[in-house]
Image (cartoon, rainbow, N blue to C red):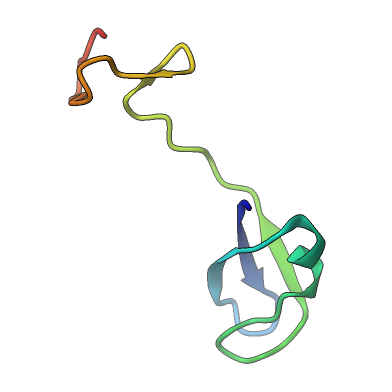
Length: 66
C-alpha cells in the first residue's frame, strides 16, 4: 500500500496516510475531522539509489559513486 500526503482545505493541516488506493478518497483530516482534503504531490526520496538499485555498499553518503 502506498502513502498519500494530504492537506486539509478547512484547517490547513498537512498529514500522510498509509492506505489502499480504494480508501484514498475516504480519508478525513485527523485534526478537525473535515472531509474536504486535497492530495499533495511530493517528491520520492531516492537517496542511496543509483540506476534503480540500492547502493552496493549499503552505506551511501554524500558524493557516493556506487
